[in-house]
Image (cartoon, rainbow, N blue to C red; front, side):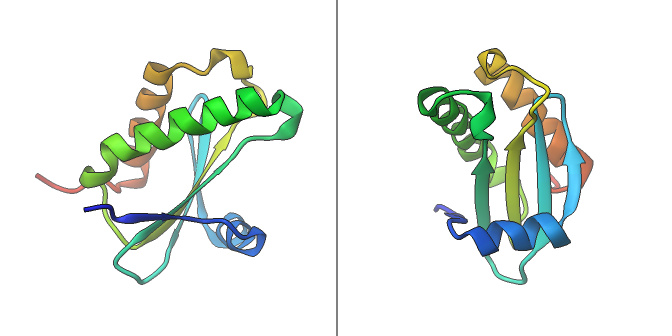
Length: 115
């Protein structure tokens, strides 16, 4: 069963970015905030300065797909915002690199379920 909904409103993103805890990988950064619900909320942001819409949407799809693959192994009750780092070229977006990065960030944040 899907345990995640998307963050869509600007104030929802700002709330997580201002009050959440920051974790960083090589390609992505993640902000986490506890929401006291039994569901996760996911937001993905890629700066428009990095490329045109096709490339930005490609990166968002890769991040969303990697999150879906690891969704059953992470704890619920959090707001999560992934941000593509501006220092990294958008052309370096590769499924395997982002997968390793997301797993590293989740391990650092101790969000993986035990067992």
